[in-house]
Amino acid sequence: MQFMVKTFFRGLRSSGFVMLFITALTACSATAPYKRVEVNLPASFRGSSESPERQPAISEISYRSFFTDPVLVSLIDTAMVRNYDLQIALKNIDYAGQSLKQAKLGIFPSLSLGTSGSVSRPSDNSMNSSSLQSVLGKSYVEDYTLSLGTSWEIDVWSRIRSKKKRELAAYLKTVEAGKAVRTKIAADVASGYYNLRMLDAQLDIARRNLALADTTLGMIRLQYEAGQVTMLAVEQQEAARQAVLQTVPQIEQGIAVQEHALGILCGRFPGSVERGKSLAAMPLSDKLPAGIPVALLQNRPDVREVEMSVMEAHADMASARAAMYPSLTITAQGGLNSFRTSNWFTMPGSLFGLVQGAILQPVFQRGELKTGYEKSRIRKEQSEIAFKQSLLKAVGEVSDALVRLDKLREQERAAAARVISLQSAVGNSHLLFTSGMASYLEVISVQTGYLQAELALADIRRQYLTAMAELYRSLGGGWR
Image (cartoon, rainbow, N blue to C red; front, side):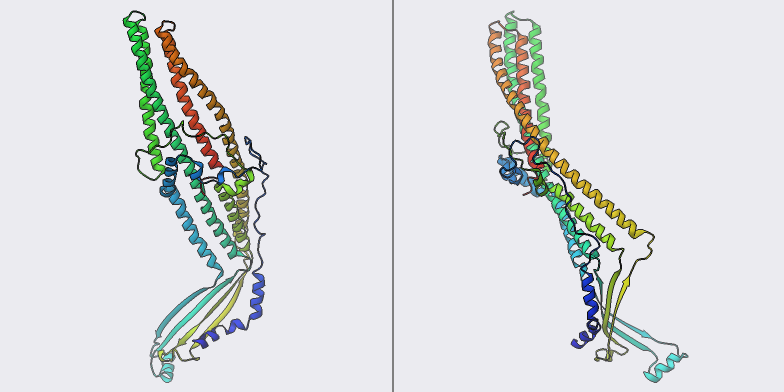
């Protein structure tokens, strides 16, 4: 066997200078190395109050530390494991990983092992039959072959390496896509949970106001029986009570729908959702460091995903350009061949070998190669534009969230002060009404205003908490 291997590669050793030349050619490349697209980002986000040199942004904090409600964190943990969108993204990563493994093996030669046998019997009246009888003493000829073949395309213009770079970029793109799904899941679960807690608060407000409306209705009925007010006052208060009562089933319906949506996000069938902190107990932070825009290049998975698309398009362009240049392929085959099975392993008489090289230069392919290269170049330019657009959108999302947080905080302070004022007014209106110094219309008006103010305050708090979650997502948080 050792002798067979030596014979098999004897032709390759005699062409050492050719291999040195090939090695030098493989250092060539059809295109320049990839360089990141230059984008002039602003020094800071609009709406950001801190100095760019401040502490790290909130995007570098784990969602388990950013969100303070343990029930919310538990829901996000469940979604990170059971959410079907994320599971699909993880399967995409596995699929791309297999393609990358295959591309890494493209620089190696292919090997094939085969065996064959044949029996040929010429006619008795042919000259071949007479020859066989005189030489072999039989009327047929056998032929048995055991061969090992190899084929190797020399990567002269980095076409194969460009394919490997493309598959690497495609794999990294799926990894970043998976991270982007994680950030979205964290933000969506948080937003849904905050909306659920707002609906819980609004249901509690509606029930308390319904009890207050019942009390007021009882007072007006007593005054009606005493002849101090007309039936119109009783009917108007009854209508006001029915309006409050109508909101209860509406809010309960919203709670059920939101619970179902959270269940689906967490990969489970619709059902009730555990509650944690109340909406009023959740802190509204005034200082949420956003960092600097250039950090989005590392922190935003969707931006990184688009950049991987640029790298993928660059590798495609390099591969398309390399296809226009000559390709060099070396093939070799060797093994055993004999017309008798008894002589098959007789060395060296049964050994055979073949080594050949081929250079193929495309001349006329109906414009397919040049058109393919131009199309790949246009795709690369499109991906670069998309990358710039993704950064512009990312900076805009962060700026929007920062401005929204600032203005919602002002609204929350004003709404809280309004609730306190109307709460005091409701108590005073009852006292004034029983003493005959206020009309029933004033009492109804104050109660209605108090209900609307409390509902509005709960909604503003929900909007602020949701804006916090959106800022966390827009900065690229939630996937670490």
